[in-house]
Length: 246
Length: 248
Image (cartoon, rainbow over all chains, first blue to last red; front, side):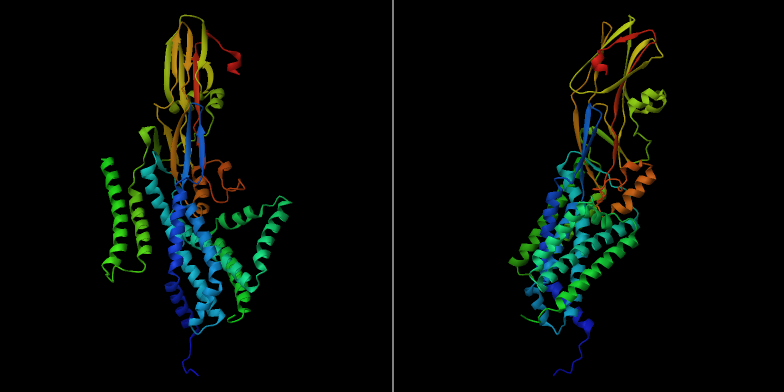
């Protein structure tokens, strides 16, 4: 019997530090994903053309959008990965319970989201530098934004990436709860999309508008915060009912 | 001067990458504990991104062969169609700033034959000249991106040849010339806070706002202008022979 009183937050902190040190490979993997994203971005993320008949101007748009999208996909898979047995058993290195492990995972995914978002945004500058040497005409057509708008943009990127990681964590947790969810979740998602398309409701577009088109920052934070909280709550419920060690 | 700057930038970027790789490998070979840092890959990546971020504001606009000029100042509304404007009657006052080139020919007959040739098609309209000469005026509006970037096409690009031979006005249209531009845009998480506000501020029409297109929830870029018109002015007493099909 141990006489040492274990502080819950100390355990969470230790687990978080452990995860940050042990799962370095996930950061390396994220960087490789972003490098691939940068490579794809060089092909352009869309174009527009305009002309008066005698001339035609083709404008290709370059930004770090693809890198951000790749980062979202990457953290989504990391979210799933964290719920797998191999990663869950690492938690038993410490005196722990499901709650502390789950909170440590939240902080780890949040850290990955912060790192992923900041590097993804900065990669836009690297893309511009590369384009400058590769393309004939490069024009900065970015809308001027205030420092506050820039901060909102950075925080929004972090939150969007975090949202994808929580969604991955949720799916992973549900699949760990019962393997049947591996088939049920995609079926339900596709089924609901098809069901609503009968009434010409494009759920993917509506989902995109709900999160990506919110112009009020506080409301955007609320939307992402509540969604993430719900996903984590369900994930915790699903994980809490698992056997300690199978 | 700019060439030297570009070469220096090249050198700087290549050196940064080489230094990163060298640090990565020498750390292992020399077994230097400080250099053999486990996070060296992450640090190198972040360092390259930071270097690119520092360089970016100093990169000048790169415009191939000076075919285009870019202005980032508040501009006048150039979304109107030159052809429609020509019909409204106040064409000369509004569109004069878009005049690229003009030709003037004396005439010795009351009939002028007008012929067009060439692969491209340019809108044209006919008006009454205030002089006793046949005037041909070529107008071109700049391209406006996101309501605040004005891209003007150089006078050297795609200019028609206009000749007058034996009262035959010949307009030889050039082959359509394509100019490719790469435009750096805001990342999509930034657009809800910047795009709509910018459009409102610049007075760009509502049709370009993000709400109208269902698929544009990731933001968007508006492009307008880029119109051209050949305005042919003949004295009041002179009539023009046209190929009717062509005129339609």
